[in-house]
Length: 260
Image (tube, rainbow, N blue to C red; front, side, top):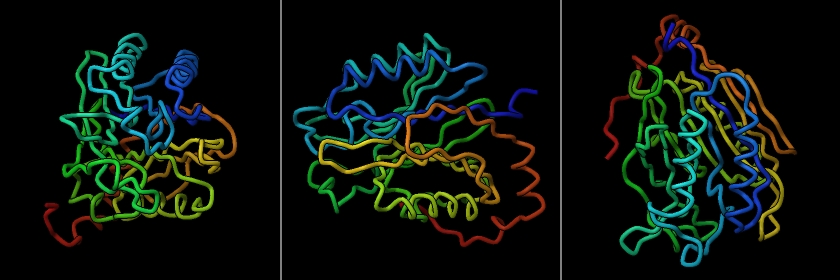
């Protein structure tokens, strides 16, 4: 029955540092190799460049080649393609997550929490609005990397959304936090949580384990992959989500507040 399942493909690459052409080529091969159902294909944070603090040199506009590539891939493979890019708009730079549909429509979410530890806040502008999108009767809250550390920003007010999707460049030294916080967000929001990360080393010699993950609404780990590139399609079940929320209606007792 339509809406009972959601198929999300997680692509965990070894990003080639600041080499857009090489990265887009490897993603197209991985997307072309996906078999079976796929509603959404998720790429990591700054998937075309790696987590670079050189937006003056690397940024593209919303009419740029990488956005056009995303639209072409979504149309060709009949899926929604998502991930974040370095985008310039009105003289400002954003770590922008795009939600690109096969029909060419694009939703955007600008990363709210900029990673000051790496000077991201000195190079990029923060967003101030969440984006909850819909596909096949499912609602998905889009988030980027460091947002994971801030539970209020992700808080599920009742049943606003069914899935939290984080795209990231989360390095190995803090991998315990990555795994733990993804699981915590699933438990506290009674939703599926998906984290899409990268592997390999970046241009600053930081190492990434990947550990892209899928957690269920009770915090149960449904899939995780570490140490090597991966392409995995997760099947999310609406019945499981509904049963958890009906049996354990914890969201009804949550504090009420507004996200300003």
